[in-house]
Image (tube, rainbow, N blue to C red; front, side, top):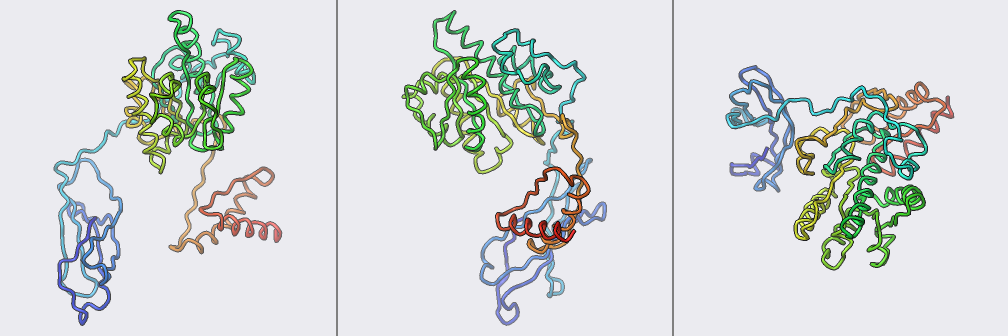
Length: 392
């Protein structure tokens, strides 16, 4: 809501500020959906002011809502603006989640390659989510978007797609005497990239004799090593910088698989970089006349999975798998408790004692994670928890 003043300011009558009440009402159902106190300062009276809030909309759509601004001290001073719904189109209310099918767990031997099976030597069968995605990952080259809770085996999903690329790379070398393909894994943080290089360096480096390289701000291999690489683990900013000069870097045009981890961060600061990467990789594939790049997006459960799938090029939703947050190998219970208070520090202080009580009730002997908004608050919360533990 954009608010602009349209009256002449008088210091005698208006002082240093003017108070207003703004609310959104539905006259047909006699409901007020939002109300807010707004102060118009004298200094910024000629500038537009913005109020951001959400209001519910129901079907069938009402004719219109009304936005009413009423002065707090001047009688009869108000402005009413209608919000018509004539041209509003609501999104489809269909279920955006994928049902977990009741399938028998697929054995690792379904890979039909002993070297590939050695990658998954820690278990004998794939979990239900991996079983459901196995065919589209390992037997097709379709783009895939997977939304699933943490700990549901998304790394193994990326590894299955990578093994598919290794198969195609070997086939391309034998039949067409061409170059091998390159897989690019994009992690949002350098810490995740380092973790992946340790894991995949052992799996794909020692067991499959593939060249796995880290390309981040801390690790920059030379051009000769990158040209021989089979798997490149990098960050969005680094790969964005590398692909800008793709004509002088042949390993970029060899990339046939792009794995985007934590793709739900598309709405954060790094979102535009990911968008540029996907668009540029498509452009490079079109310019070189080679087979298109396969995109694998890994994320937590998504609210707008169909929009993200369309952006990644998931055709006819064949590769779209957006499981509910409740679909997880280890069951998770969620307890929500509200706390009053507008100011941050007092409200956080009131949470410490209930948080300690919840720890003693649900996990008295096991590790616990408490998330707060800042480093300072981490220290304050830790000190309170220690004092509560000592007094207990």
